[in-house]
Amino acid sequence: MVKKLLEVINLEKVYNSEDAPTKVLSGVSFDVLEGEFLGIMGPSGSGKTTLLNCIATIIQLTSGQILLNGEDISQFNSKNLAEYRGSRIGYLFQDFELLDNLTGQENIILPLSIHGTSSALTDEKLMEVAEHLEITSVLDKFPTQMSGGQKHRVAAARSMNLNPHIILADEPT
Image (cartoon, rainbow, N blue to C red):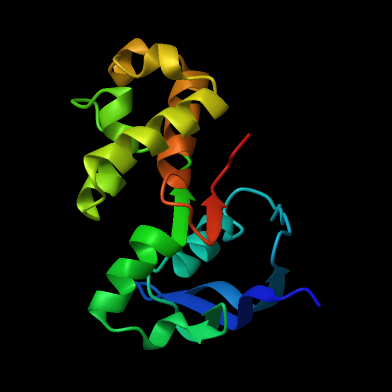
């Protein structure tokens, strides 16, 4: 039997502004099974990034539940949220979010360093993902020296290097 990896249940997100509340997500529900690939499509401004940011706990949902491997992430304390963000999800941002003062290698290994991964394992994971994504030639370059496609692959490598349970990709193509 295939296990549910992610469950989004009746998710709502409302932004309150001075003018009036804006409901961005209303009653969104879906499941993602282990090993499944799911694409979310819609016009600009329809709430796709907001949905991903709620799942990633970058922004707080207004109501509903998000379960990863059966655990309600809205109930996590700050320590569990840090672990969740750092090792259980990978996030590929729409605009890459690479640090311009770090090389490709440094951008990729940053999450490993933050989470105390040994340097031997860091080097192993770096080379594994860099070879897989064919970006070994840009490891010593800064983002300003990379093409858009190379930046995208470096950002993808960063999101994959901790072997997360799930990868969220905002505008991955």
